[in-house]
Length: 223
Image (cartoon, rainbow, N blue to C red; front, side, top):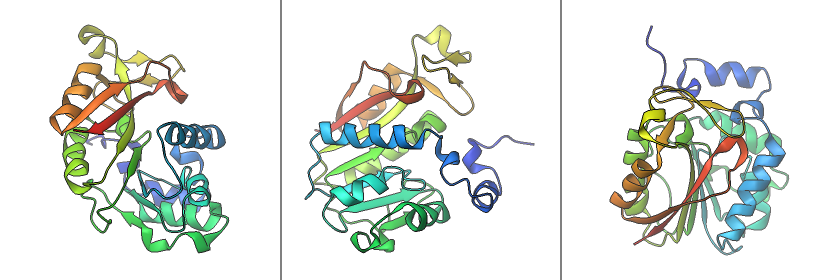
C-alpha cells in the first residue's frame, strides 16, 4: 500500500478525528501556545486590524480564534484541506461569530486559492509545508505571489536539515520532533527553501530562533 504524503491525506482521517472530538489535537497539539506564537509573529510583522489576513492551512482556527477578534469584521480568510475541520473550529472555538462569515472558510486541497479576494495584505502558512514535500511549496508560492497583488508579507514555517549529507536521513529537531526526507514531517535544505521562495518572486529570510517543535520561520516579501 502506498503511504499518503501526510497523515492528513489518509482516507478517513478527518472523519475519524472529528467524530472523536479531536479537532484541536490533530492540528499538532499545544493549541494555546502555538496559536499565541502565530499571533505574535503576525503582530511583529506589522499586522494591523484593518489588514486582510489569509490563514493557509487554517485547520480548526487555532490562529483564527485569536485573529478574528483583533481584525476588523470579515478581514480574516482561511483555507484548508478539510472544510469540515475549519467548520468545527468555527463552531467550537470562535467566540463571536458575528465577526466572521462562514463563507470565508474555503476548502482548498491544492493551493489553488479559489474564492478568495484579491486584496489580501498578509498571509500565514504555519506548520503546513512541514507536512508536505518540497514540490508543494514550489507550487504554492507562485500561486500566492500572482494571486494577491497587495500582499505585504507571507510567513510560513519549515523544518530544516543543516547540510545535504544529513538531509538524506531522519533528523531529530531541537524541540524533539523527528523529521524525514521522504515522509511527514519533512525537512528541507535552507537553500532549497530560499530558492523556491525567490523563484516565486519573493525576497526571503529564515529566522534564527526556533519555533514550537523546531520549526523555522520564513518571511517572504514580494519583490
